[in-house]
Amino acid sequence: MLACATLLWLVVSGNRAEPASFRAGPTAPAASPESPEPALPPSDTPASTDARTDVARGAGPQPAVGPTTANGSVASALAAALPEITGNLSVAIIDPADGELVGYNADHPYVTASIVKVDILATLLLQAQQEHRTLTTIERSTAAAMIEHSDNDAADTLWSAIGGAAGLRAANTILGLTDTEPTGLSWGLTRTTAGDQVRLLDAITTGDSPLDAASRAYLADLMTSVDAGQTWGVSAAADPGTIPALKNGWLPRDATGLWVINSIAHITHAGRPLLIAVLSDNQISMADGMTQLETAARAIVPAVAGAPNRAGWVAPPALTHRGG
Image (cartoon, rainbow, N blue to C red; front, side, top):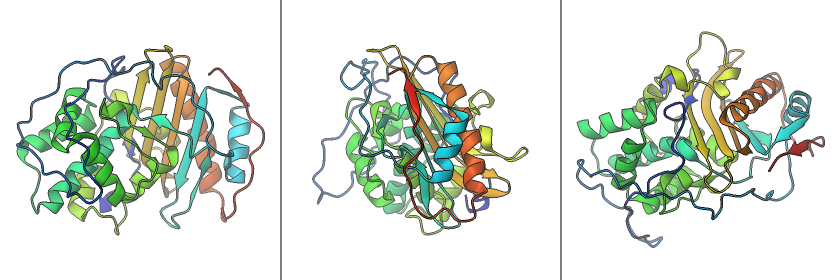
């Protein structure tokens, strides 16, 4: 993973379309803050059953959180590329060289869909480190299916293995995520922000991460080996010939029929490594959501990579939203 610090991370979600609803996995009871993190159950933990969980609750348009702020160059580039934004759209970028986070609407909440699979694997690796062991052969093959193919059955199995929502929440405290809230209903309905997703990428790529070098390298290997059909998303802003470490997520909401389209990655642009998350919801279709997400990435990444001094945050130009 250290060797991948200059690679582009393409985190993409599963097959060309995720199911309308995620399955609910068995979860451990919520632990108190003082409780130790749950131990991993045997590696042959069975997959969960097919209960529909994408219910109307929380499926509608989400209100803005606080004032909309953005780095000036990011906001200007976004306004030029997308004078009208469909649904909700958020962008966050960290340059590992200085660790500064810049973005647009970076604190707006979204459901994760399959991008949470990176967080699930990071949690599994962190728990294994705490237990002074390596992943079992079965855990490694399940993790590969979950990240490379975005296999939902594999995610169900590892969600159970980490202790469900309680396990993810405990690991995220250690990883430095502050705005990600899992639910016992389904891993895919975990709520997060673009800002927290680049903080996750930072936590799994930097040398001072709670994850050791072997764990970071393992994550990088899987995220740079996703299925060819899942390499859309923020990878659109990557330098040609580079291999982003990427994970995408997409989900049609039962209550509205509108789409969640998310993409997070470690990319290289103009020879400069960047951590980027573009999250969106209330998209009319998967194709439209993908196009808007990639347009935003192509516009914003050059603005950040080309800015010699990104200090200071300013109110962005007015952007017109249509749709939910």
